[in-house]
Image (cartoon, rainbow, N blue to C red; front, side, top):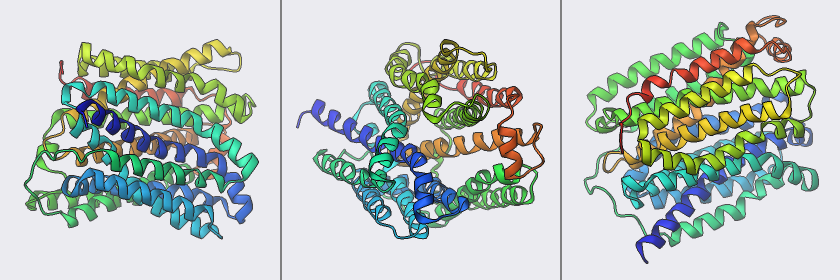
Length: 462
């Protein structure tokens, strides 16, 4: 097999693996109301169909990347995608919501196995100076899947029921597994084997699980609620123990070569902050469009469609800009566009036209595509030899924690806005219908603007 064909196959597998995860998340949102009615589930149980998955993914991504570095990313990708498909089939025939929650958590475990491997395959197949284009294509594929999810989910749920959104994962998973087998095993970057740091992995998974669970609960409890404060304190305590343990172990879960890499750590900080700002802004804007402007879900999706379109179309342009201008300038430019987009969204009102709304979301989508391509290309390209998997796991962790943090910031701010009655779910719902959401969005813009600091630490050139 020629080098070009091998690279194209690896890119196809990487993009398809990323798409199945992105599509699954957005399709489920449309299916949840029907699932709740069919299984007689409570709102809290329906929320756990998402929370359980998110906890499993966020907790295990780094460890999964480490496993790939040790045992082979092709093997982990095959196991992950087949397990993901099997869990999806189980959910499709689940008799109760308890089974759905448990199988969603299992699906999250397999999702954690496959996600770092999709990035590591690119790192092992393409030379570092040619990663911009495949990363841009992968980013566009994620944008297509995220944008198509609600539409596909709506069609499937309307005509076939909520179980169909999980059945659709099964043939997709089998096809990706077959393609993975066709990709020649990439040459490992090192042969020295390191013992797995199981204690560090358990501590890191615990810290991330506690943190994500706490952030997910902010809309119900507020930032000053006892569950939030205790959760943050517990996460900080586990992190402190992890730091001590990592300094004493010979083979830490996050290798020193990765922890000392300024481009890698800076890129992850950029992704954490910009995804937080973006998804927090989308959370706020969705409630504004539906509760204040009284738009239906389809009209809301159409208003936000330019964001997805510019993510898809802007990713290849961002890859070209990365090659021409280098990571630092490209990341700074993308971050500025994200900040300007969120500020623009904060100025929307009932008198806003389709053109002005679309232009605002277009700027936001173009900026986020630029940040995604730059940060992902830098993380993967600067991965120390032998650690492509753990670096990919850290990147995906930032992409999972960032949106959760942003939504928690948005919900916490909106609890403070009148006419909220206090830190309760009911108060949050009332506040979310308030059109005066400018301060919340400006805080989210400030969160994204913090990414300019790590962006300035990226290399000037490739």
